[in-house]
Structures are given as C-alpha cells and as structure tokens.
Length: 423
Image (cartoon, rainbow, N blue to C red; front, side):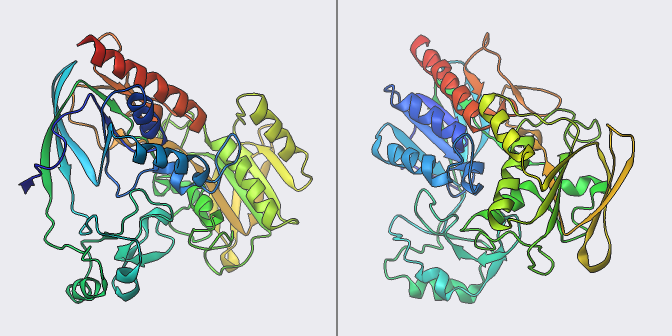
C-alpha cells in the first residue's frame, strides 16, 4: 500500500458519500466559499438516484438534477472529489479531525476519453451490481450512462489475457495496471456523513419467496427495468421468460414495520409502488395491478393527488392486509396469500409478477464508520448538535425521499460551516 502525495492534505469539510445528500452538502458548502473534499466508495457519484428511472416530486429522470450538480462540481475549484475511496478511521475532535482514507485502484487514469475500446475487446464478464445482478457487464466498463467522473473502470476480476487486450486497444494510454491501493490522511474541521441507504435484503424474508422464484422482484429491480439504460432497455417484463406481465401484485412493507426485520417505516415505499404502477400503465394499458398494504402513506398534497390518480384507475386494486405468503405455482406464475383487514376474508391471487416494496436500510447498519458517532438500534447516525463537528445528512440520519434529503443536507452544510467558522 502506498501513500498518495498528490491527494489533498486538508479541507474545511469532508463529505462522505456522493449520493444526492452528499452532492447537496458539498455544493452548498463550497458555494458558500469553503473547501470541500467529497469521497465516494463507488467509482461514480450520484448514489441511488443514479439508479432510478424517475424520481419525485416532478418524476424527473436522474439526468435532470444530477447533470446540473456534476457541472457545478466540475466548475468549482473549492471541491475535490475522490471516488473508490472509503474512510478507515476518524481521529481528533470538533474543528480538528485527522481522517484516514483508503483509495482503491481504478486501473484507468485521467487520459480516459470514454471511447469504449477497452470494453469492446474485453471478454471477461462480471455481475452488474448497478442493475442488481439482472444482467452481466464487461470487466472493463463505464459504471453508469452519465457516470461522473466520466471514466471507465477495470474490475480486478479481469483475466490476464484481457489485461493485454484492453491495454493494446486503448489509444490514449489510459489503462494502468500498476495502480495500487493508497492511503492518505486529510485534516478537516468538520465531517458530514452522507452514506445513504441500501435496499433491505429480501432473501431474509422467508415467506415472500424472493431469491427462490424468478418472477418475484424488488422495487429497485423494477426501477432498473423501467430505465432505458437498464438491463431490459426500459421494458418491464417477467425475468423467467421475458413476457409482458398482464397481472402484477405489489407487496408493501416487505421487511419494513416488522420487528424481525426493519421495525420502522421506510417512508419512500408507498410512493415508489404508486410510481411503479404508472410505469406499468404506460407500457401496458390493460394490465391489472393489486397493491397489498398495511397503511398507504402519501405525505403532502402533491403525493395525495398522485395517490388519488391511481385510485381512480379501474384496473388498480388496493387491498388493506399484510401478505402472509408468496409462492410459485405453474408456468412461473406467483400466488399471493393475504388477509383482507377490512372484510376479514383470506385472499389468494395468482399473478404474472410480484414486486416487493423492500425497505430502506442505512448503509451504516452493516458498515459502521470508525469514528466517534452515536447510532440508533437500526444503524442510523444520530446527530449530536451539542457535541458538533460530525453530522449525518439524508438517509444516513433517517428514512427520507429526495426532497427531504436535499433539505436536510442543506441544513447539515450550514452546521459544518458553523463548525469551520467557530474553530
């Protein structure tokens, strides 16, 4: 492991996580005149929003907001960005932190023009994590369609033969397999943790059948399916046979509000499923959809109107009741069993496709930062404003949608600036 002497040695504020909250915190802080170091463990910025087809409140594609933010970052000299970088430890106190960072090798340098020649000749394939394993990608790949920084990445899984192929194919000398992991230490006055969230592992929910049957998918998988740059080029289809689903069941609170999994409401799931119903309706005017729910939460007037639009659809049905079992029957079809909480009747429905509204789990729940932080039992970072110095933004602090995350991130930028000014 080597020390990277070219990396920044200090900054006013360190922002950990390059999703929508981290981007907002970074930009608000830097545009107020303070130096910011933004670190992200993935090879690209954008976080979960990058994986969405559309997001509320305007149902914009990711390009709508992220493209502007990336331009603002690129043009602001007070911002330094390190991708493929993780925090190993944070030492010190408010106003004076020493942060050790580990930078993993990309094997692609600044000469990259995104021409794609390396990917064209690469034969090694890896699981596509961006698409939740629904397809495979080359081991020399562009992480996302609008990836920032705009550079390819070479997976460590690439074969020896492919290493030679991709180097020979690159006309710009952008491939560098001599790159190694690096560690650096930076000094900052404040740290904002914007480490985001991950979908709850639905394989842990035994009664819902995910992982055992192909035609049971998660809400984020449907989001990628509906995206034009997704594994099916925007076509919502059954994974088992590629057929258009004529009947779909949405199972709400898949892991959320369950003491055996996530005891809290994940906030975004109800609106996500309603949004997904509009995706289906656009592609399949005659498809029938059933939404099984405990409570439907549409916070705010705009979301309530969106919910009402779906209620007025004669082929969208709402069943209040927790799903007891999801199982496969003949021809890959799926049977959903639930109890209707209103009528008391047991409901059994067979559909072509089931979508689980899996909950939001904080990334810090399974990967706690090595820092003087306080966590809830569920892994969210608690903001201790009295102690100050380190703050949690967006979904690192609590379940939230994009709008709420941006509002919270702006507030955490102000808290970080106050720390810098007051040291």
